[in-house]
Length: 167
Image (tube, rainbow, N blue to C red; front, side, top):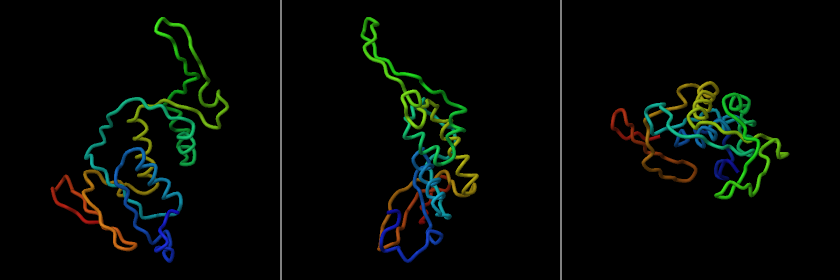
């Protein structure tokens, strides 16, 4: 269930959804919620800049399936590479085991390797295009939340002003 039973009388259009964290999971969550009909989705990201640090990620076929469902797999594949196999060797260089990866292993989706920064840039661009630029807010750090019935109050620190904001 996406919505708690106490909210059954509300439509998806009436919800204000806040996603705390603008990393890979937060951006994918926002895109998925928007795709399921939640129109008021805002992502609050602690970092004030889009200087993506990171390293290469190896996305398994099930992760690529999610990107396919978000209509982003083709774009991701255009800036990544797909390993054809995985091999294990002994310390003296003898092959112990090898196995095909992704599509070559009969999976429905590829396995791809991509820099974390490239993936984040693709996801952030998709969020801004689909949900609007104002939906992705940088410089907001979640501090606490309180739930009363079907309402949740989130307190965040605004890094630009140093003030606490309540959503």
